[in-house]
Length: 386
Image 1: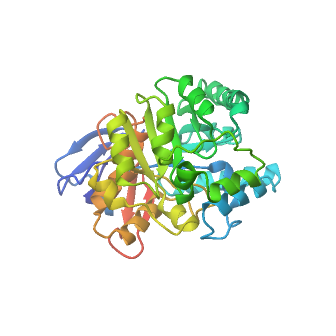
Image 2 (image 1 turned 90 degrees about the vertical axis):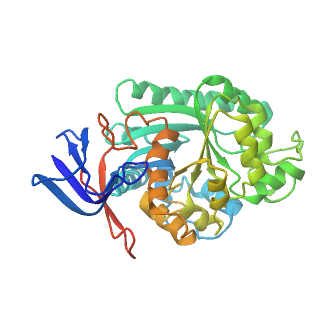
Image 3 (image 1 turned 120 degrees about the vertical axis):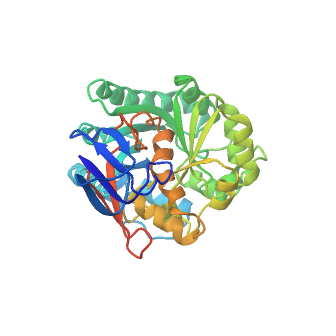
C-alpha cells in the first residue's frame, strides 16, 4: 500500500513535502517515495513511527488514582510500599491488561517495563509489543546484598526463559535507585552482564542528593520507616549520580530516568565518563509527584540523547507518549514538534537497543505507523494505522 499525509516524520525529522511510503501487508517499510500518485491513500495530519515508552511500571497499574498528586517523592514511595499489595491477584491482572491495551491504543509499540516480580509475564506472552524488562534489584543493606541480587537473578531467569520462546522480548537486571541499592549490590548488578542495559531512577527528588551530601533529610526518614538500618552508610559529599557511577562500569548502556534535580555538572560528568547514556523524561509523573519538571533546556543545550517514558498509573493519569510530549510542549513551547517526535520514537528505540527494528521509517523495518491529528491544535490525537 502507498500512504501519505500533510507531513511525515521518519523518526529523525520531517520528510520532504509530498513524500509517500510504500508499506507491505505485514507492515514492513518497502521504500520512501518522492511523491504521491493516484494510488496513494492520503491521511490528515502527521504520520510517524510507533512510539517507544522507555520507562513504565505495568505491575503498578492497579494503583491508578490511589495516591494524591503533589505529595513529593518520599510520601509517594511510602504509599506505594504500603498499598501495592492491597488488591487481589485478579484485580492486579485486570488492571495490567487494561493498561497494556491503553498503551497499544495510544500508539506505543515498545516498552521498557520495570519489574519487581514476574507479574508481567502474561503481557509479554501476548507477543504484541516489543518488551525490554528491567528486573529491579533492591536492597540498601550491605549485609543482604547477595540475597537481594539472588532474588533479582531468579526473577531475571524466569523472564529470560520466556524470551527464548517469544520473539519480541529482552531483559536485564538493573538497580532501582541510589537510595535503595547498596554499593555491594550495585557492583553485583554491574558484574552480571558486562555489556548489559541499565536503567535507574535518577535524582527524582532533591532529597536523594541531600542524603548523599550529608546523610540527612527525607530519604533517611524513608529508610527508617521501612526498618532499614543505614548505620553503615557514609555520605560521599557528592551528588548521588557522581557517587554511584563509581560502582558501575563505563562501558554499559545507561538510561537515567526522571532527572528532575540533575545539574549541568552531573550531565557533564556523565558525558566525560560513560560510553552511552540516554536521559529519559517522564514529565507527567514528575508533575504528578513533585509538581516540577527537569531542566529540559539545559539537557538540550548539553546535546544529550533524550527519550520519553510514562512511569506508572500510580503516578500518571494515562500511559501515552503523545500526552507526555504535549506536557513538555506546554512548559517548553520553544521545542518544536520535529524534535519532540524524535524523542518519542527514534531516541526511545535507541535507548532500549531496538533501533534495528523500530523507531524510524526506513526500508526493512516494521516500526508501526501512527497518524496524529491536530498536532498544533488544542487536542492532538493519535491512532495506529499500521
